[in-house]
Length: 157
Image 1 (cartoon, rainbow, N blue to C red):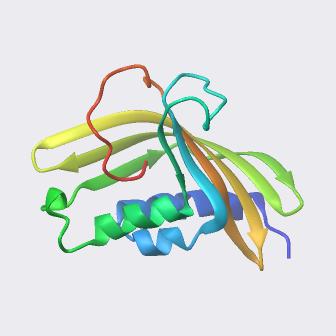
Image 2: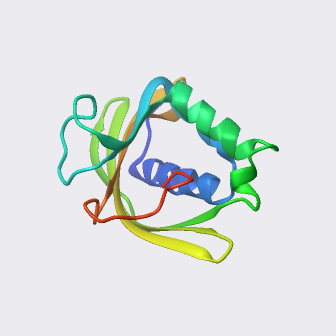
């Protein structure tokens, strides 16, 4: 089975919609078991292991995050945080057989009660075609002003 450029782009939009709608369990199913979600702390950071990051989570940590977000006894999330991704059309940078690389520029808004946080981001997805379905192998989210001070990010840009 081959995947078109439009199907790759639609996958990126679908992922953002799942997050905006709080469908975190469904979102987790998009990930490959050895995938990582990385949010570097520094501009053009190249090492997620030996340099501090805002977030570097494997599937186990992502599952814990989703359990917390879905949990009935997560009092820090009462009322729950909500988010909204505003994406530019994703660029498909590479299409090599069953692997794909995309870059998406976006604005991310996270809100809870009367607090709202706006972040400008660049997301890079490494995707793989597995058993006829696109899956996330890795995702890197760079905050444009990563060197600024900002509140905790509760959800997943």
